[in-house]
Length: 180
Image (tube, rainbow, N blue to C red; front, side, top):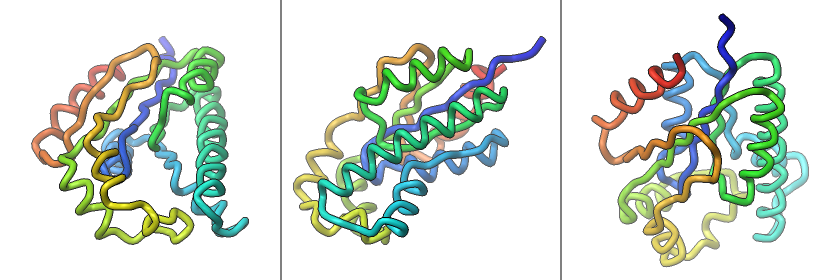
């Protein structure tokens, strides 16, 4: 029996631990990991940085590219992990892609305490095109305080607290069980 491919979508607010979790799961599950900021930063390098509107435009282009890359993976029968600050506005394209590939999806929402998110965000160094310095700390704290919403996609949903190291093992076990 051939198993249909599956897609693990990792979402959350900035600095919630999405990329760290995605790369760790990628290694532990032996799956390719496609990260939004990898695409967006390549676009910044090629097209140049700009203002907040430009950054948002490149974000949406990056989500479109991620969806296309995931489609290629899933259509070939290969599972993968997608990471980014996905929103409900992306759900229709993902649903369509999953249906076209006969794939299923699980979502993992990364969370952390708002103070920890602010600490991580302000201490990290990212590509200057992200314009992180322009994001006021109060805006970041407000965004961090909101729990990231799952998209309206069928499939299991998992919440992951990146502040709690012990939370990883049960999440990995649950994903392995789901993938069987």
